[in-house]
Amino acid sequence: MGSIQARFRLDWPGFTLDVDLELPARGVTALFGHSGSGKTTLLRCMAGLERAPQGQLTVLGEVWQDPQHWLPTHQRPLGYVFQEASLFPHLNVLGNLSYGLKRTAVAQRVNLDAAIELLGIAHLLERKPERLSGGERQRVSIARALAMSPRLLLMDEPLAALDLKRKQEILPYLERLHAELDIPVLYVSHSPDEVARLADYLVVMEAGGAVAAGPLTETMARTDLPIHLGEDAGVVLDAVVAERDTQWHLARVEFPDGSLWVRDAGHAIGDAVRVRILARDVSIALEPVHGISIQNGLPATVEKMAADHHPALALLRLKVGPSPVLARLTQRAAAGLDLKPGMAVWVQIKAVALIG
Amino acid sequence: MLLSPGDLQAIWLTVRLAGVVTLILLLIGTPLAWWLARSKTWWKGPVGAVVALPLVLPPSVLGFYLLLIMGPNGPLGQFTQALGLGTLPFTFWGLVLASVFYSLPFMVQPLQTAFEGIGDRPLEVAATLRASPLDAFLTVAVPLALPGFLTASILTFAHTVGEFGVVLMIGGNLPGVTRVASVQIYDHVEAMEYLDAHRLSAVMLGFSFLVLLALYIWRPKPARGA
Image 1 (cartoon, each protein chain N blue to C red):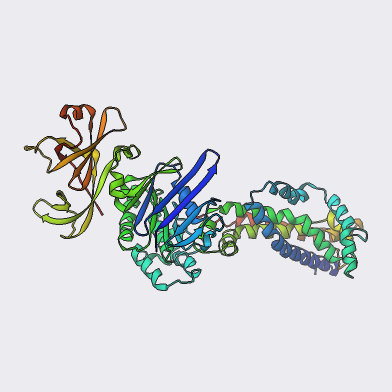
Image 2: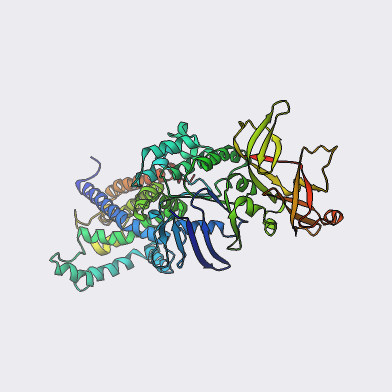
């Protein structure tokens, strides 16, 4: 077993990739960053589609490359989903799905059936790719990668080429993947929303380097990084549905030392869910506030204050029990309340998004 | 029968020559076109230029050099003589060899364009699906370039049929061996047999038109990555 160790250095005119990462052996790792930050290049290096001469890559104990050895792409047991579905136009859906399967020694028909089921494409098998919608194509290409039972799944912005509606069509499948898949997934994205929904581990890329890497909740709550997230700075918390208020269509989700009322999305009591709280939706009060429309107020401790992306703004990191919460407020408000690390305050949370 | 036995013999010889040349060029031209389409070395510039030379070179110039090389004192001539095969000029296979050079760009260039049109992505996808480079070439690149193969084969065949200068230089005018249709027409005209020249010319005209018509009407859309 073990994890994934990846060390790559590439020098191109005007661009240098230089990363040294250790990534978890399970769950979804998001490679997050702006375009040009090197996340796709890193993924291509891992797949062997780019050749980094001094690179080193060990996946779950298997050496895929080191300075002396280099496995070509077709000998690496991986699955790769490209940004555009890139189905073979001369084969129908089943032909596309079986292409890799036929070339895999350990191929099992059961994996193909499972992939078809997981992505909901059983009714499309006879179709040619040109007769599929963009969303269907991408589902087929994900199933095609999964059918080979890869030991590592690499996904390069699989949703970026799709419009919002198609994205919404595919995201539930990706969430199922996240829940049911037992292999490590590297997911390249520049969308904080996708990262919040799908990732367990987050690597933030900038200018060819990894500027942060760590578990999702911690990494997203880092005040020295949110500059990368801009307006979307916020935290993601894992929670459990504890109570449902059918009269008002609300559900109470619990996380250690706190709970929040969110819109009821039909989850059963006991379901594990994720909630995302954006920093801009959190305000601070020195004591419990009454006579306010905001339903979620929680006691918290100020942990850290940092500058934000605009000089008028401050980003506050607080703790609700062990869980981090970010709050964005103006520097003037922070000064007016005389906020300092260690202070006990109340956070008023205006909006909580239930994701996944 | 409108055409004389001599005409029919010439047509059959022409078809045989064009068929053999097309087959040989499919075998030689495909890897060459693949290399030209995929390679990134500076080398491919000069090689591409050499491949294209027959497009601009007078057939007599090409024929002249080939004659020297294949002749009794040329390197290829010495080689074929050492093998006990005699020399190639004024034989069917000499004509085949000359035509292979002469029609090379008509095979290589459409194929190169077709291969370039496929792009890197389908081959990268094939690699991530465990296909070795050869496997990916045969199961992805060739099917996707099929329209290019058709165009290249038809052009090569038709261009070989239309050869004249190189044939005269290398093959001469031996009935059943090197006297192809274009040379046969030349003979008819020389002998003032205008009616015979008309008949055979009309056949050639009709054939050429039909080939081009087929190319222009039924041109399969190049398969696009989806």
